[in-house]
Image (cartoon, rainbow, N blue to C red; front, side, top):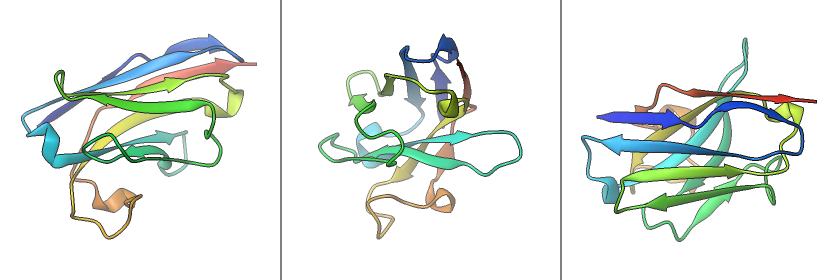
Length: 126
């Protein structure tokens, strides 16, 4: 299984970026997906999650109204559209996959995810 994250970069505060996470080696429709952010010296922090169908999405309070998660089943890819970026959005963004139905929570904990991508760095300059 591979999760290939891309789309990170350097952007000014107020700008936008779209991250992509292409999945291979798994049956995409069997997995819910999540995005996490990590800054040096700190744990991964939940950003967004999407159920396998894409119908149900969940966001951290800090990104609600600014970030939009979507998935394209035909391309086995999930996206994270990040708008109105702030300096505190800076970090390495990771996508992760969890077998649907394997968690009791709509927002699974980090430890519950089955697979992780390699991360893509987002730097927001103020």
